Length: 459
Image (cartoon, rainbow, N blue to C red):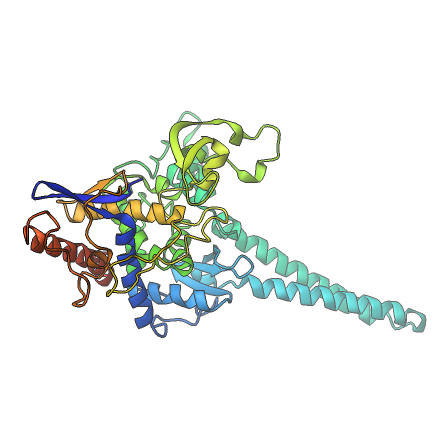
């Protein structure tokens, strides 16, 4: 992973700690939170009137809202009804087409009421049996049972229309879909079976290319951008197969993750930029490719494939969250996750901690425990900055004690008039290169600021 940013100036390598650039991300995300008030999108957050975000600002508002309001809420994205769970807090699931306005919680509650009614009537029937007045209670009990059965049938039928059976999917599931949508989505298998039956056994159904195919990845990224802007999603063969799956992952990326860690909102926008360039696949963004078929729920079974060795050289938080060690088995890759800095398996507790911005009047950076999530965020950010500001390059090594690096506040608070200035003899000669470096730091700050401020224009 990338750790620092470097640039040659006047024959010397100037280095910037990636954490200080992450502090700039934190600074502008915090400001946007402070400026965010009520939800401006249409809706009430219910199954019948779900939130319908149509701009980056509205997605950001919803991320702030769900963090503060721990209640079941519904969102309409690209025609799908997405549910925010409260049992697992910030888990999101697809409950089917939005036009059905299905509220699974209401049906579950109605079943519980019907079962209670049936049970009470059976007790009443038993008590009234000696008086010969049990029949009407039994009729009411049978009616309640029938009502509960009808409701359960409706739940089962609606779950068939929902992605992943209306269960909140993991990012591993998302990566599997990106890799092989024709296998992951049952409607494709049904389509293939029908096509074979109608055209004869000799006809071979062409297997659709995977979503990680380079020619199709930009189309999926554009579909995500369309969802964020509320634009219509072209239901072409290129990504209509993914239509039932993609909206719930968009909600996870731009509502659930930022609700846990507000920096994720900007970092995930940057990830879209990088994936569109094909720097990595969407599947790799969600999950490590070697761990696609490793199910941690099967870890106690004798033939679990998680005991197999990792082929590539991978480092992750195997022992502690603040240090990286060599990952040796496939089962340990769930600690690594994908390129996206999401919180893997209870691992994001410290990652939620702010990249402390500190005071513009101080030359000393505030201390913070750098978590694995911070490291992933920094790596993504540095790759993107190196593209936006080509005179800088992302580096795999961090800063050493003798590294030539500007003062903390000159990096994080470069726009502030009272921030400490770069020393006049920073390069060894009075004033040489200081103004150029100061302008370069302001440009880095502006690039990060503008990516969030003009996010709607860049969709």
